[in-house]
Length: 134
Length: 122
Image (cartoon, rainbow over the protein chains, first blue to last red):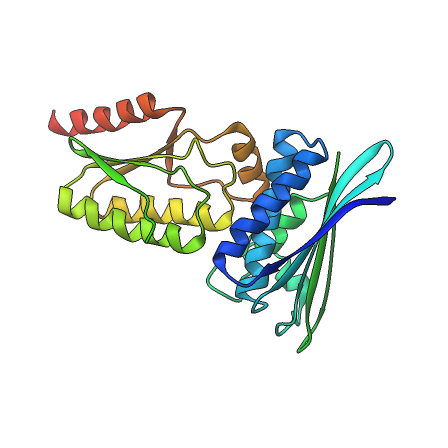
């Protein structure tokens, strides 16, 4: 697996969430994703960027374009130094929210991705990694 | 401050979302619309989201909220122009926009609103 391109964006404001969506779209287009695949990845990115801002108190996303012939992919790693998630299984349940949301962010992003992993330590922060391939 | 324009067409309000909205802008639209429904005594709201390439759970919730608020204010909401890729993604995300009427395009959305108004006046 080779890295074609890598960039890091801050997630500090609502405008940053829009920028994450745009940068994710650019990467998906560059990797030749279909429109549906682009939309799924961008939507997942939007959910996770909002989580990083709202629950993690801000952080960053690393966007990596991957090549593993014959397939090509985009990997997104969201990192925050927020309060962390005590019960990841619960956080992944549809409809569960610790804030005022619909509780679809994490579970929805997982469904919209081909790969999904989450690491979190209470008091230290959370890292969510997703990838989508074509 | 940037705002999403709300146009009045007879008894209806027309909103065309043409920018990738950040969350505050979406919240602002919710407030502006409810104000305008009351001020204009509007009976219907048509929201055209054909230019939106992404509808995530936040925007989806905003759309549901607008429809619910409008209903309380005696106005019907129709969302038109959802792109096919957006529809696929919405359902996979787990969002079905319950309680929100949808139509393929502005013409059909407008017909829906007019039919409802005509039925009431019968």
